Each structure stands twice: as C-alpha cells, then as structure tokens.
Image 1 (cartoon, helix red, strand yellow):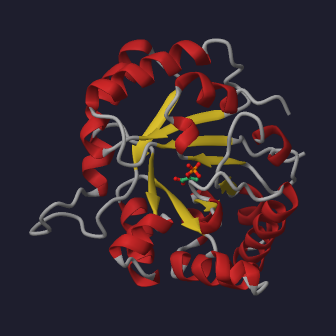
Image 2: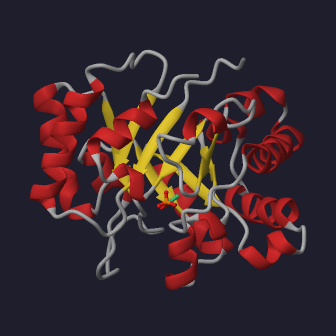
Length: 257
Ligand code: PEP
C-alpha cells in the first residue's frame, strides 16, 4: 500500500458550456458530500471558458474539487493568438494542466518537443502538469506498449529537475482505450504504470518514483475503477466520458478499494 493520495481527474474535453459546467460542478459537490475526501483527490479539467465559473462555484461552496486546464500554451505571454498561458490558469486558482493528451498529439500535431515545453511552462506557472502518454493500437498489437510509452515519457520530462519531477502526474492512456468503451485490463494498466515508475526510478531515484502519481485513463467507469485501483502502480484515473455525469464521476471518486 503506497502513501500516494489517489487522484481522479475528469477531462470534460470540448463538452459543457459554462452554465452546464456550473450545474455539473455544483451537483458533483453535493454528490461528494458522501465521500471520504481525506483518502482521494478529485479534479475537473473543464474547457477554458468554464474555468472562471468553476472557480466561483468551488470557492463559494468550499467544494473538495481541484481544477485545471486541458492544455496550456508553451509560451508565457504575447502574440500567440488563441492560446492560454499557465499563469492565466494559475490566476484562476487552477492546480493542474493536462499536457500531451492523445487528442492534442493527434489533432494538433503536438510532438515530444512541444509536450516537454508545455510541461516546463506548467511548472514555471506553479501548476502541476498531468502528462498524458500511451500507445496506439498498432503498437499494442506489436507488443511495443512499454517501449513506446516510455519514449513519450522520457521526451515529456526531459530536463526536469528532481523537485519538479516529484510533483508531476503521469496519465497512462492507451489510445485504443480512449472513448472506445474498451478498457485495458488491470494487468495491462499495471504493466505500463509500473514501467513508468521504473523509468522514473532509474532517472531520479526511489524518492521521486515513489511520490509520483501514475493514473490510468481509457474508458474508466464506476463499474471498473475499483478493480483498476487494486493495482500497486495505478494511483488514480483520468476520466473522459464518465466525468460528464456528476453521480457517475462521484462514484468513481468514491470507489471502494
Ligand atoms: C480521456 O479523455 O482522457 C479519456 C480517458 O476518455 P474516456 O474516459 O472517455 O475514455
């Protein structure tokens, strides 16, 4: 049993306008009243335009919900039309920023260099990056899931010092399991999450490796989360579709281990 506090993070993707986001976060707050929040952390990653509203609701209700961006700019400020900086998120009380989600890699061509720059931008702004890594189906079918995922990990954290590395959250999200309903088996998740921790141990030593939370993501639901959480190196979940319903996401947060 590790002393890492599990993190359940809900990635809303491009869903819910600010009014819908407000309704969800308020309902989630009510649902979490029945959950022992000393043993688990809950976070939501809303669209940027919802974050101010989420902040207001969380502060007004003292809700046990952290929040953050689904992405951030690699740059601090300036002529980067359409981008949102880490310091802007931080000014809204954000804790986290997802970086390198497979949809950013696939639709926006974000490679290891961009991902690494965004990880560093998040730390520079005082945010905790949730670095997403994971293999596509053909790499899994070829048995290359560990090698492929570790290459993304090493690229994403290149140049980080141990103090930052200790804070980072890694989300192992096999691309074939995202939004498909096809969840990795607990053993599949454990294999890669353990390899991620092993790579961190090799690079930074046991103190960092034992502190970092490694999440699993890909079709997590209230019906499969508990089994995934029995695995030693799985420290929580990055949840897409199932985070859009307050009752369902609260059940995931309140999983019975
Ligand atoms: C995700 O968006 O990171 C994700 C894991 O989505 P889903 O839970 O819908 O598979």
